[in-house]
Length: 139
Image (cartoon, rainbow, N blue to C red; front, side, top):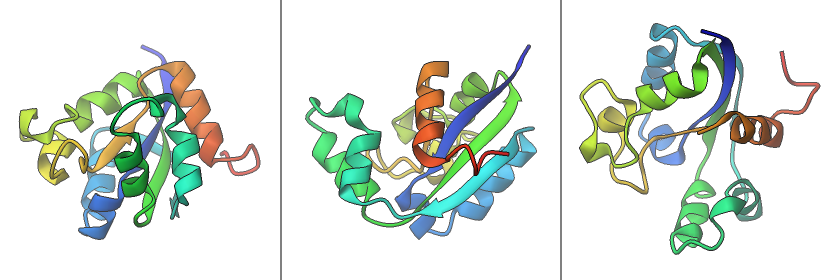
């Protein structure tokens, strides 16, 4: 196993519902180290830039509107095989398909409002971390 970093978001639906604390607790209980964390309120343009890979998909407008609708919490997490471990803890994109221990099952409402986001590969994690955290902010 290798220590790895990944990028994570507690999305606006979970922040608005008051689930930030329980999600952070679950992250730490599952052995992640939170290296960086901040609360941000994305503009629509910032959300569009972050999700640029989905710009041709039908859900792009709805996604970027949602992600700019309220504050979210962005984090850099560290753990052995962090990308896979975070994705396993989040669970499926559709909360209804998750297991009781999955964060999206516990805190998500729908495919579109599913409480959390996580990088899916090392190159994605590198882009996403740099999008939100400058070199001067990184610990």
